[in-house]
Amino acid sequence: MQTSPGKSLYQIIIDDILETIKRGQFSYDEPICTEKSLSDQYGVSRITSKRAIEELERAGILYRKRGVGSFVRKEADSGTDGMRSKGSPVAAQGKIIAFALPFAITQGGMLRTIEAATNRLSERGCHLTMHICEPDPRKEQQLIERLLAQHVDGLIFYPSGNDLHLDILKQFTDKGKPVIILDKPHDIDYLSNVVCDNFSGGYKLTEHLVDYGHRNIAYLSRYSTNDVSSIRERYNGFAKCLEDRGIAVQPQFINMNLNSDYPMLKHIINSLYKAGVTAIECENDEVAFNVYMCCRSLSILVPQQMNITGFDNIDWAVTGSAQLTTVDQNFAKIGETLAELILSGEVGPSSRIIPVDLIPRTSTGPARS
Image (cartoon, rainbow, N blue to C red; front, side, top):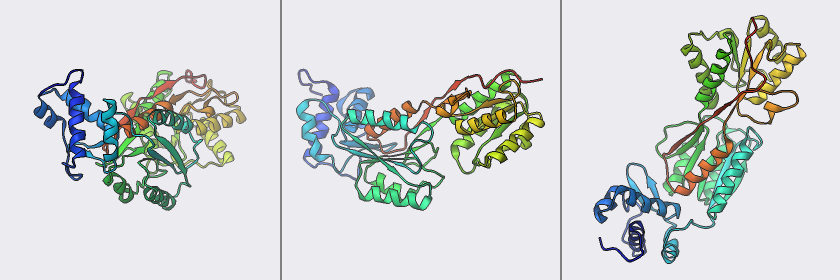
């Protein structure tokens, strides 16, 4: 391969690909290149060919289908000259990324996620738009259909349930527009996903309690493990830790369809206490706070007589006198990861698992005798 003075190898590859696109010597339905084909053609390392492809993806010129190759975006032609004139690729300006949230954005730490994603996208000239609807599958479908009709350049979707509306999302990816599912693990070969390590979080909380000597540990959730995948993963982490420590899960201490009525919750807490439960692991911080308030009204001392843990590390965990042991999901990292996947231009599947951290506070301590 002949090199040009002052021009890097990967930039030569980029310029050649841009020239191929400009001349129309490609098909939108066929990969224009792969890392291996570029390495063989130019006699360069896979690292160099990968760098060239990644730069073109970040600029919105190419998108990748894993195991197949990189394709030209149908809206990419007009941006090729601007990339060449500056000598290196720049982010496509003015892209609109939709974030569909079928519930209040104040839930959990979602505001931190939105802020981090917005900041990262804006650095590259992209815009994040928020779209909220009720947690109803029919209304979710209508929202996604409207976003498809509005020709947004990418979609981040946080489903309220297990219905991913795959027929509509497939239409996004068929147009080379990335779709990322948030907090719902899946194996769909054309969708990406970003999830927190809910299993590890549940495991760490339970391990923390067991290390304090707790053996009768209850688990409370407003949703069943069949309804919400994140709850399923948290509970599975709880159950696995007990199994690893040789402690049996006691079904009478598990309530996965918790009634939100406060008097009923108070009755449940009192029954658990009388049955010998010394620790209650809750699906999230909001439930944990309500459990904490029930214990106070029942004169059950926390943590001397009852340990309480939450999940999420949001304001509920430190409201009033409550100082709840919880798990931090790093919502800012979630937002940054969502933005990075969108900017990569890769059209699924790509999976990112965000690590979590145990946050011990004064709601946990040694088990009562």
